[in-house]
Image (cartoon, rainbow, N blue to C red; front, side, top):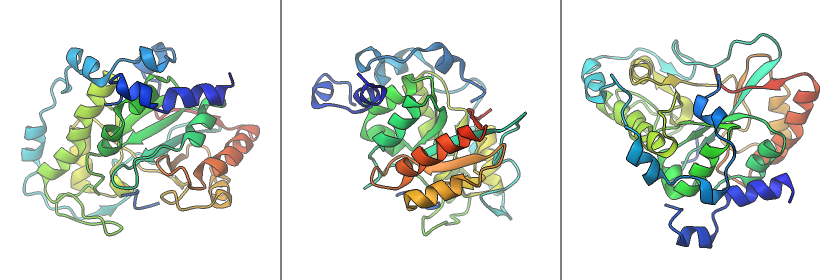
Length: 294
């Protein structure tokens, strides 16, 4: 069996698997290695623990983090800055050579709950690591699929929010998507999926990217206080899965050492997979190494 065929078997949920009980708004814009991920060998679907089994043995909250206290701490704060590249948001990685980090968002919600199997198959076949930012709605649409991604040591699962909102404390919108409207809503947007990913993977997520990747500076502080690192990007690889393959390849050709690229993995008909399939081997041939977020 070829590697792509094997990966497809791991990632597609068949009706037989669903019967066995395993299966439990597009993004507006556009791994320092995990001990658990590195110690776990890829497993067939039947060997991957269900999210319920993981939840039974793993505490949800990170010790010392009180979401209620974080929300209370920022009540009444008025933000003055808004954007995708504020202080406290990681947009590049430290490097010693020609390294870069690939990240892909799965935004979830109506019309956005699919998976780009061609993209995931390509990454697996070529042993290219990536950080996958999953929205809670995308996870809940097919928990078994997310569990199999979590079991692959090439990937680290990260937090893409609960409802895919821009992260704000006063309702600031981006791309016509309303932001969270208070510190409590900002906490809920992060923490709802923090709990879901902890249940799914057995460890709390290290990274968070807001829906649309927009934040105000108070929301950035909230994410840090909740124990996650806000992540942006320096290379917009597919513009919310709207680019053609040629546009994706061109965007990726402009990578520089330390770049974090953003792409999308929930629209299989987009140009993301064919564009990445052309761009990533060319980058590797040019001496680039693909690494996880540190």
